[in-house]
Image (cartoon, rainbow, N blue to C red):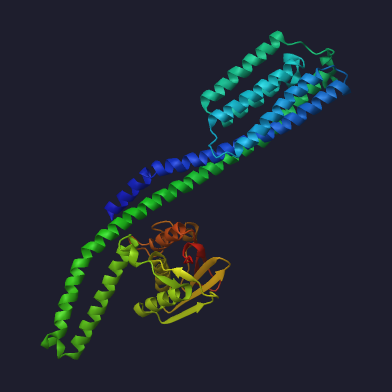
Length: 447
C-alpha cells in the first residue's frame, strides 16, 4: 500500500501534463473571451457617456466644441466594437495580445477626444487611470507597463500641444465651478466603472481558477485509475494460472474414490469449484474492464434484460436476505451492454449490502432520455464529510486500509459515460444512491 500511495502522490503532483496544459489553454481562452466582452461593454458605456457629455457641454453650457470631428472619433469606436463582436464569433483563442491592442486603441481614442476638447485641462483626462488599472488587471506585466508609459506620454503630449477650453477660472466657487463639477463627474465615473468591472474580472478569474482546480483533480484521479487498472490487469493475469490449476485439481478430486464416496466432501468440492469459477469470472471481468477482450463485451441487449440479468447474477452470488427490485423503466430500449456499467451497479449494491445486510432495494426509472438506477439501504447512512467529498478516493466510513475506492471508481465510470452519481441520507434512516446515465451513450443505433 505504501508503494501505491507514493505512486498516487507522484501522479497527483505530475498530473498536469500535455492534456492538462491543453485544458488550461482552453480555460484561459474562455476567460479571455469574457474579458473582451467586458471591454466591449465598457466601450459602449464610454461611447454613450462621451456623446452625452459632448452634447451637454456644447449646447447646454455653450462651450464650443468641434462636434463633427468628435463624432467621427466616436464612430471609429463604434466600428471597433463591431469588429470586436465579430472577433468573438471566431474559434481562435483570445489572448493577451488582442486585449492589449484593444486597450491601446481605447487610449488612442481617448487621447483624440481630449485633444479636441481642452487637452490636459479637460477634467476627464483622469480617465487614463481607468485604462491603466484595467491593464494591470487584464494584461501581462510587460503589457501593463506599456499601457502606463503610453498614457503618460499621451498626457504629456496633451499638456504640451493641447488648447485649453474657453472656460472661466472659477475654481474658488467649489462645487459651483464647471471644472470642479467635471472632475467630480470623472471621479464618480471612474469609481463606478472600476467597482463594476474589476468585480466582474475578478469573478471571471475566480471561476477559471476553480475550473482549473477541478480539472487538475480530475486529471489526477484519472491517472490514478489508469495505474489501478494496470495493477488490476497484471494481478488478473497472474491469478489466471493458479485458478486454472485449482480448477483442474478440484475436477480430479471430484472423481477420486475417497472424495466421491463421501457425500459431504463431494458437496464441499462442488462448492469450492463454484467459488473458483466465480473467481475466474471476476478475473475475466477485470481484464474486460481493463480493455482486453473488448469485443466480447459488446453484446446487443435491452435495458430491462440487461438490468434483470445483472440483478439475478448479483442476487445469486450475495447473501442478501430481503432484496426488492422494481423496474419502472417503461418502454424497453435496445442497448449495447457495458461491463463497466454493470460492475458499477454491482459496486453500489455491494456497498448497500455491507451497510444493510438484511434489506436492500433497487429501483429503475426513466426521466426523458436519462436512465436512473437508485439503490436504497437501511444502514447508518453516509457521514457528512463523505457526502461533501463524494467520489473522492479513500473516502470511507469502513476504517479499512484501501477502502473507499468503490464509489470513486463508480463516479469516474459514470463521468466517462456522461452520467453522474448522487447520494443522500434518508430521514427515516439509511441512504439513497442514484446513478444517472444518458441513454444516448448505450443506445443501439438502428441501421
